[in-house]
Structures are given as C-alpha cells and as structure tokens.
Amino acid sequence: MKYLGLVLRNLARNVLRTSLTGLGTMILVFVVTLVWSVLAFLDQATQSRSEKIKALVTERWTIPSRMPFSYVNLLKDGAAREPGDIKPIDMMSWTFYGGTTDPKGQDPNKFLFAIGMQPEKIPTMLDDLDQGSLSADDFALLMEGVEKLKKTRNGIILGKDRLKSQEKKIGDLIKITSVNYRGIDLEFEIVGTFPPGRYDSSSIFRIDYFNAAMDSYPKTHGGEAHPSAERSLNLVWLLVPDTASFNKVADQITKSPLFSNPSVKVETSSSSIAVFLEAYRDLLWGARWILSPSILLTLSLIIANAIAISVRERETEFAVMKVLGFRPNQLLILVILEALIVGVTAGFLSSGGTYFLVNDVAGGIPFPIAFFSKFMIPQGALWWGPVVGGLTALAGSLAPALSARSVRVANVFSKVNG
Image 1 (cartoon, rainbow, N blue to C red):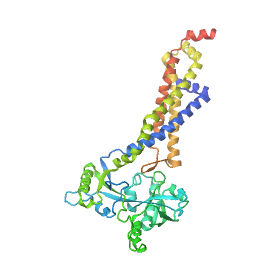
Image 2 (tube, rainbow, N blue to C red; image 1 turned 60 degrees about the horizontal axis):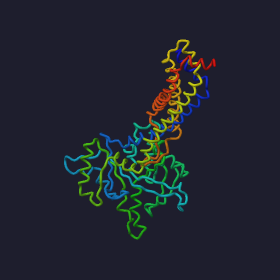
Image 3 (cartoon, helix red, strand yellow; image 1 turned 30 degrees about the horizontal axis):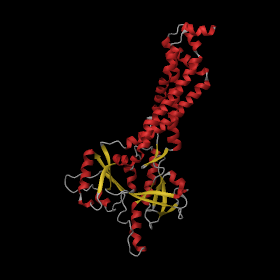
Image 4 (cartoon, helix red, strand yellow; image 1 turned 90 degrees about the horizontal axis):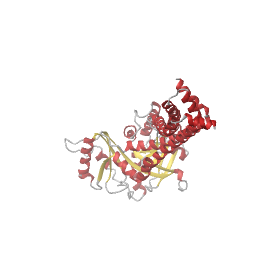
C-alpha cells in the first residue's frame, strides 16, 4: 500500500500533465470504441450461424429484387411438396415503399422509406426486437404499437428519427406521395414507435393495406393494372432451425418449377449482408487495419512522451531513491505503475462514458450501412477501454521506465555539484 501511495503522490505532483495525458487517452479510446463497435456488429451480422438461420429469398438476376406477391404463399412452406421436405419455422415478406409527405418534393427531410410486412412478424422475425433482446419497458412499448398496427389497417410504426423528421407524433395522419409506385399514394395513421436504437430510422406498415390499394388501382385507371402489380414483392425471409434445414429448404425452392418466372435464389442473411457490405469493403478495411492501429500507436506515443518528460525531470529524485535503498527494478515498476493507473483509469472512464452516452443518451451511432442505420456500443466495450488504455500505457512506458531504472547516481550528482 505504501508503494501504491507513492505512485499516486507522484501522479498528483503534476496534475496538469496527468490530466492532459488522461484526457488524450480518453479521446482516443472513445474513437477506438466507436470504430470497434461498428466493426464488431458487422462481423457478427456477417458471421455464419449454425442454428436459427434466416434464409433470404430474392429474384435471381435483377437488382433490386422484384417478385410476384403470389410467391409469399408459395414460399411460406418452403416449397415443401414431398413427405420428407422441410417447412420453415417462420417467415416474413418485405415490400419497399418510398415516398414523400411533401407533395412538391422540395423538402428532403420529408422523404419516407417504409417496409410493408405482416405486423405479427415484427417481434418474431426482426433482429433485436424479440422479448429476450429488449428491456421490459422497451418490449412493452413495441408490443403496444404492434397490437395497434394489427387493429389499424392503415397504421404505420415510425422510428423516433422518422417521427422527428416528419414533425409528427403518435396518432397523427400522414399522406405519402409514392416515388416507386406512382399512383399508389397512401394515407397512414401513426400508431406507434420503435424502442430507441437500431430502428430509429425505420418505418413499417401493413402489407395488406398496400395490396388493397394495388387491387383498387384499375378502378380509377380504366381497368388497367398498375405497371408494378405483378412485381411488388422485394424480399422474403424464412427462419429454419439449422444448416441442414437451410440447405434442404434452399434446394426445395430453387428446384421448384413454381419459382421459374422470375427465378429466385436463396442465401443466408449473413451472406446477403456481406454482399451489401462489398461497397464499403475498402472503408471497413481501412478502419480495421489503418485507423485503429494508428490510434493505438498515437496513444502509446502520447503516454511515452508524458512519462519520458516526467522521468527526465525526476532524475535527481531517482538517484536519491537509489541511495535510500530502492532497487532498479523497483524504479522500473514505479514508472510503469504510474502509466498503467492513468491508462487503465482513463480507458475505463472513456469506454464506460461512451457506452452510456451512445446507448442511453444518443440512442446509437448514426452510421447508415446496408440495412443498419445505427450501431449500439456492446457491453464488451466496457473492458475494451481499460485493456486498450493499459496495454498502450505499458507499451509507452517501457522506454522511460528503463531509463529511470538505469539512472546512474554518480552521474546525476556530478551534474548537481557541477
């Protein structure tokens, strides 16, 4: 304890330098935590799973995928026809609907991208919206909106960012002038919102409301169907229990003659996300292998510089300590401990503060990539900070600590006497 007290007193002797070193460490750990959080989430999203696999069915040859909506009823059983065929555990369909609540189209903030799907699938098929992934209050908020959506044919659930950009609140009506389904302009009642975080920029409505509008289109257009009436389905998600089931279901679908016009492909959600991320490959590679190491190197240099200055200023003190009986290795440990205390403490404060501010205050990192609009800080980040701060402090303090260890008493006192 006396040794630790000596370390703390040494740090307190120059509060300004200690504070600036700690502040620099906190800023760089903050940046590293943000970068690693995004990379960790994307790694998890693209990692192949062995159970509860989501299969994504899309049109084989066209991007964006556009399939007949009749495929939904055919795909919900995974094209199972024979006694040994496998059926999916669950499914959902996605229809993309984009438009603006500004009829003149002059305000970009009024643009709204929404997904038409089955409302009962929101808590069972959408990632991170099941009861096990949300707090009790957040899940209750979600289910309140889902239940209202089930009862309201023209209902829509908006994330909090979409509510803010549209300057609306729950219970308000909005009319969307569509840009991808010309002539299918829909009026919605906002019935709920999503828990803060990943779905802040999302919007979901009932697909049967959209289909009814599509069916009514010929009545006001001389009996002619909408040009996209036969291609209004974008994606179908199927949930299967394991890899073997996925392979079987994928084989059933791709070999079925029911899906020949247009033909479809089946892939895991992780592989499909990886395809979307190809456009960001260079950016993510740079963040992983250039930005992160550069930050860690900079952090080590900051700590090394601060400790080196301290050691040079205290040469006489170290010489006196050797005369008083301190061994060289004790001086080395003393300097390293000073750096470790600053690095670990600043790292913990930074990662803990980042976790709280991003998750509980800001509601996520706004960095839209593929289907992801925001990224949360994982709980693992709470130990990233102390580890990063500690290891970089250790690396940065080795050279100054060795310098303190090798202080020669005779040389120091000769300078003083001279």
